[in-house]
Length: 580
Image (tube, rainbow, N blue to C red; front, top):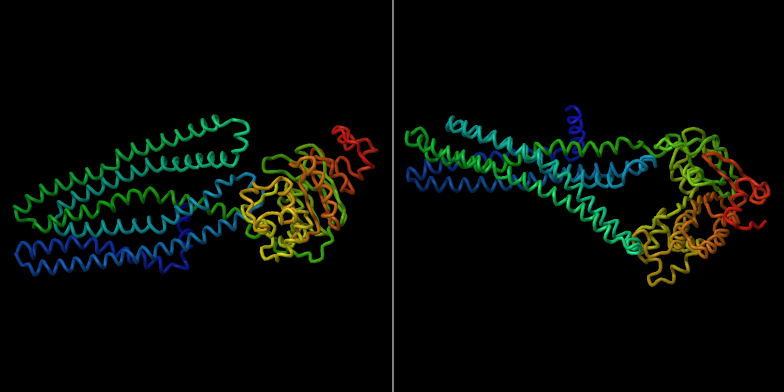
């Protein structure tokens, strides 16, 4: 309970800038409740003081008063709803921004163990639930409680016995609605999850349609989709059964209560202890409270889920580092491009140690090829230089400065990382190249494209640099995606380039052309290249052989071949003749 109260307090703190909107909205909801609660009293007076006594002018005046109260009720309802929704949207805007900023501050370890779908769900579904809670559920809770209180107050003043009947009805209806909400909400949560599962299958099918067709596995995919679709169908049927059982029960209770009121109220009217207007007022109160009673049951069940949604968002926010850079972080304004590892150890969140005491120094402008078996820790070296991960022990330095102490903006200008499978956004080629520098001029973008040897291809397209390349660059070949990624990296004119297996997904001819072009692209820059393909040896000054997280061999390619060690065995294994 304390945790829920803390979550509620923190959630409401996001309303501070619009707190008067929120307070004003709650005040207007109270006025709306009161005007709804007083209308049956006015109806009673219109009947008893006007219609029964045949004073039609009195009845007419009360009719006008009821109309005036209804107008004010509408004004209070509209204005209160507007103020609460506005303040709720403002609060959720900042919660969503805080969560999104926190996601970007998180280190790579966080993304290694967190599914992207969960993060998307928290930013979309959880914030939407919070919006409904702040703008609708709180409004309905306040409105329902106050209207019931006002109604019971006037009912007790008119007749205690009938008020007890009404109070018993209220208790039973609230219990039924709360039970219904308790039973149906988990099913609806499963329905939302199952809908996401079906959406995931459909999205994956569309994205991988070429693979599916090439392997002729349409029937397998359809069977899987059918199974999940059947699960969704079953959940919806379960929800319908509960709704059919509990959904109309409150109306039955209300009907019984109103029948009892008519019976006992009729007897009271005959005994002259109750007026006709009072009986009509009681029946009107029961009808007036029906919707608030139903909403109250849903609201009670939804509050905890809304606070749980807030807790999930706050978990993302609180677990992120407060700042990307260290307080004493510095800029490197004139980078030389030297890279050094000093006794570096790295263990991933799975518990697997991938680097064990690595010592390495790369001189400015040197080209180093890192080779080794899969899982040996090759790519981890590049990711440490780019500061995607932080070593458990030891230091990674650029120009003698620990990368942890370099401002991120400065580090990104110095170091360009090109992954094995570069991500191309569903935007124009120009926007993809200028991703790290959105304000880049066109001549800068063209210059980077020319260095990456992709300008001629882009110019041949009907829309040139404004060509939309599709999701994940689906309209481009593997080599073209690599070159656009290189152009993106070169736009900032980095001193250090990290290439993670840049030719692994290329055919032999494309690989040969890219390797030749890389000689020009990497000129004057420090380069560390991870690859299983030894065609890149031609670019490098030195080869590093890594195994089980340790450097087991390093030196010039020609020296290592003569040495007859691990690198020489790799050359012989792939059947290539190394040219000195």
